[in-house]
Length: 420
Ligand SMILES: [Zn+2]
Image (cartoon, rainbow, N blue to C red; front, side, top):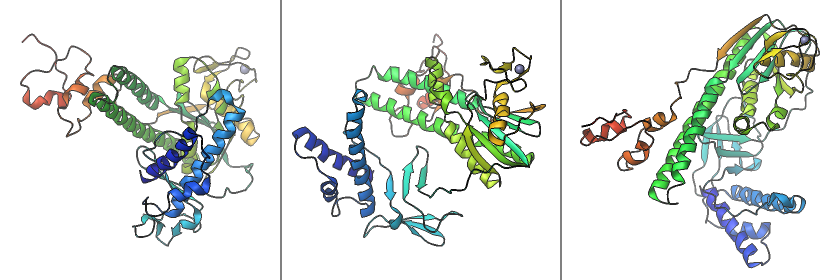
């Protein structure tokens, strides 16, 4: 929040200059604003925030010139939060801990040093991800060539939205991990948010009720974020366990960048835009490295539109791949993974004879978003738990007068309306 306050201060000065059409403050002028003890941050952190602001201004200036149709605005919004940043020279790495200074006279942030943490890291950034803190670190990319591993067992991974991952090895085994749990959580979130936003659009902005609906939104967002992350980890864990069990030495993860860009309807577009395959790729990479496997990624262009047995080109409609030429039939995502083998390892493999299906994890049914929104514990100190949450009741519910301390509402009991 302190960094957010700094950003807001710098932004205010710049905005004022734009408004009054005086000379825009440059880097040094902005830096001098934050001199002294005004902000409880390390001087290098302050500099980093200023640097980010200046970069934003420069980028906006450029984009306004080259892409006027984008209607880019200069920074104007107040920020409540901003990541804390430390350049490499401000970070102290000791034997068992990492010390991040917060400025003279203030306690430093001290984090236990994870195994494998380099002695001389690059810049560091501390970010809030909605569920916890992430520590981002700049590292030099290793320049080793992507090895064309020969020999050993290879696997290719086709990431998908319907199925989180489909894996095919060159030993005739395949695994399909369903993305059903993740999809159902996201669907629940979209429906619930839609309903709340509809309610909120009828409230006066800034009113108590408006605020409370805002808190409900953030609670739902954070909870579903954690649930989805959990399932992503469980799914990729199953994928890597499968690879370990099959003695895989090298994994190729296809990059589905092209798929997402294709516009194909409102619902589908929403699903595609919420598909976080980058996370899957990252988790697979981390987990496979830990298991001692080689992991690399590259294009998956055309892998899902060719027949694995005769090469006939055909874009499948449903989840089943059926070749019109040779009569081949198989699972669409496994077809994608099989076709990746020639791209990744330069060898054609036969369609797997044995396909295992797994779910990422078991989640409770989320068919009734309204009910589970109601079930969430009321915040203590927000007065009665009633008004906001009880609005989410589906059927004919009613608050029975004299029910013990409104317990029915707090515990989410479904009270049917009876003629009293
Ligand atoms: Zn065919």
